Length: 492
Ligand code: PNW
Image (cartoon, rainbow, N blue to C red):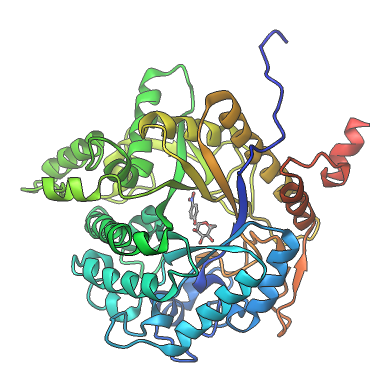
């Protein structure tokens, strides 16, 4: 061909760091022992077990509460620079409130942090990865603005208690999934299905809670502890299905503002507040519905300023791309809803597939997202806090290896060709675990876990060797054994 192709870079820049992630509710188990309180996922899976594809739950999960030393060994074998884990709020504060602290909860995390320190693995710790104490959900959860104060107290305790051992914090994992899936829909616990209403109440509380935790850390703890703190925002990247169709291009931009911009715009832009297009669309829809006020309440000036600039890095969880096919209402959209408010029809029909319907393999979408973030958010320092691939659980997981290889290649492309400032990468996930409503039917792990064996043995998949070699050499592995045999045969 005559296209100018720059050589594929394979080597990561000096100082780039690698890790893997998990989340408390997906791995710990021990749901009601040693003083842990009930959380929204305990309640959801116990009262509506049919909501989980294979009827599993997090009661035992992969028992990391008891097997954390095995997990640390697996991390050591991989050679990771850091381990991203989350703290279970209800394990530390059974009722969610600061007036009752569970000493066994603190002890567990201290033991885990000490085991990591011994292996020189740095913890990157998420304060909230979806497992709200049920007692706080009973008060309305994130739809209740009072949660700002409850999250402040919980964060304060965590910074004080663990801040000497934890130098990197994440406030919230994926605010979109929290507010839209759990409040606006039934896709995550508690599944309130308050579409077009609860989702926006949630985002107002969550962004304020995030900002207050940031300022607390920044002003009180950072001077003594010297760490950093960020938020992890999930994106589904939207592209026009026909890049030459102006209308689709505009609608894809609107969709990206609704998805990523919903939480990124208030924190990472000079202007602050929700994206203008989002404010306008929801106001217009609300008016058409005969409402006196928009379902999306704008922040006042105090909160716009208070929320702006409250993240040291832009944490990005990225997995997949959707296409925008045209204007209108998505056939799956409820009324009213976030999806209807966008005003675009979307499709997942793009790239290769995985075990998850929502996860399509489309690496170039990742590069486009990263370049878009550089442009829209004033060239932030970007930390990839999740990226990964699901299958049904094979040990020869060539699909996972090629996913990682192709998505990591795109990171190298944007670093070297577009000067995007990506400084770290986190793979989801260390071992197969409780994949929320998919249970164990979709597997994202480097290690396979046989959940029918009471010992829950962790067995390395081929991707363990791939990721280990990547980290050891700071370079994309070129080794033939990581290529799918059928593809290899075709090349020979
Ligand atoms: C993340 N999407 O969720 C979560 O942070 C993890 O707890 C979860 O296990 C993992 O990804 C795999 O699902 C996502 O639609 C949910 O793009 C949805 C999307 C991405 C991530």
